[in-house]
Length: 220
Image (cartoon, rainbow, N blue to C red; front, side):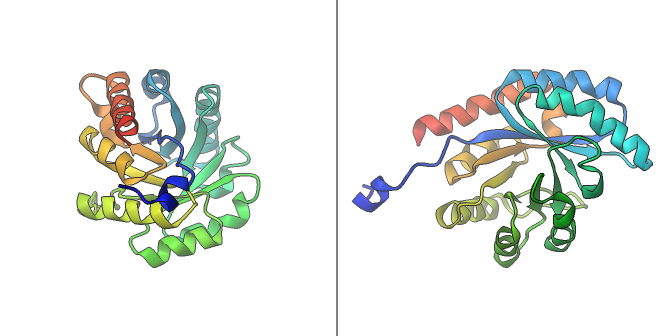
């Protein structure tokens, strides 16, 4: 049974979904999938991952996608490219690693969102929060597709939720990870490439994730 002190603490808001796109180059093919995913559930943010291109092309892709996301009251974040965010009308950037995060702050703050992932130690996570991160992300794959064990990800999320006020995004590697990450205390649960590659379509994958979030919230 919870102590009186615990019962008196303010409850965290219900977790929300955060979509992570595959690397995007063909907007004509991708836009309908993203539009469907955004219409399938409440989505807080979309992290746009861009295939390599020249600066003008990158800005054009971001500007094309921004209204699609923002008209759904979701934030459009871009992986890296902090120097392009303001010119491309995005809401912020997601940086990987504390060094890249610190290097991008001047281009983003205070008008834009600055999120940080690639935080493999508690020290780096705390350093990002102290530097002004709007959120930290745990559990996303590294450049080689490797992740910590799922038990370690859940433990890190639970530790963060217990101690810190800066929001935490927990990366779900499959639909079955959504509910336990939400139960652990994630403020947002990120759905990666698998949601867009789902054979049923992105609409079904996102709707299922939202249902799993609702189950976690009901059981809280």
